[in-house]
Length: 441
Image (cartoon, rainbow, N blue to C red; front, side, top):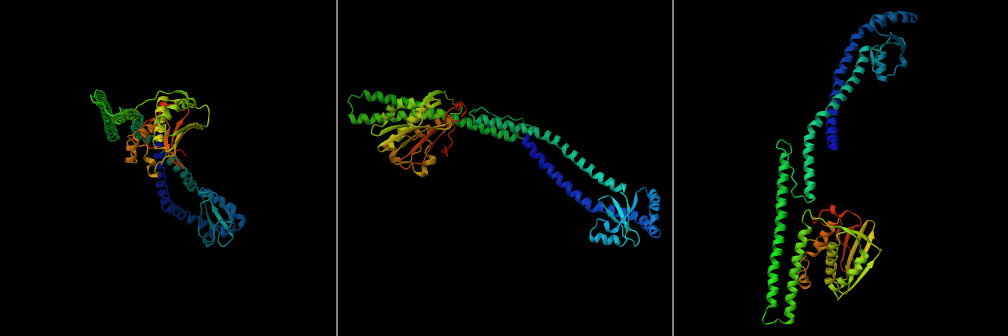
């Protein structure tokens, strides 16, 4: 609120000052000039008479005569050299011609005494001094008026700010997974219409996410029942299947079961409010122990592990990390020609787990979309290698749940997938929405 108040107040004060300056310049150019000219006319007659009298007297009698005349006028009088007056050439010529000149610097009037080289100086004139003092009074009043505007602005802005704060709080809670978050502004609020629009949006979002999860879970669970029945009936066939037919049916059933597991896992990971169960782990020993299982996923390729730092402590959900690495390694083994490399390294407070293969790689135009769910870059390849397009989407969701990211890095040959995770970050404070991944710099 402070920033909004200061910005609004400064804009208002700037507009106020500009208006005052314009009015002041107009006043100074007209009313004040006219007033000064009128004052000159008032003293012109007295100065003319005095200068004529002084011109007829010897110079040594001037002080006494000016003192007497000064008491009558109520102002100080003295003489000065004409050449010493701080005037430009035009004003000096005007003064030398016998005209009266107003010296604004010291609030005095000056007039030449006859044809002498002396001038009569009258003042300072109290009225002119008062005008100068009045200017500072005006400045003080303007400042007081400007400062007094702050209170009504604050009183006017406060209810608007409260409404904005409620909107921000509700948006933050909604973004953090609290689908019950609502603004519920009072009807008299100036932001009531905006609040109602936000609440309707949140309600639709809650219904859409709940409907998507319900549909995914229902489909997954409903698919398990006919799969189980199919396996049972295949086992109860009177005429046994050939070995090749049995293997083909087994692969299809395993693919369906894997798809169901991926759908349930992806739906759970992208559900707002999903929370991890973090613990402290040492990843080098875990990776070495897990290497034989990964190798079993693709025995036709050589799988190697490169560790750049030992040990590698990490805090997170190891079950989800295993699933993410299983998906990355299985994806690399499906597309590799001969070898796959797993690399574990630490850079500052970031842990990088990368998987590279010597396969065809990822097309440049597909790098930004590779982690989207159900994405098929090559239909024929997917039919040959299997997979429904959820594996990499699950990897990205797991990375984001840990406050990290999954990305595709440039590689001279094949594909280079990287899972970047914080080492010591509290993992329960991160959203799991499937935003686009950004490759590390």
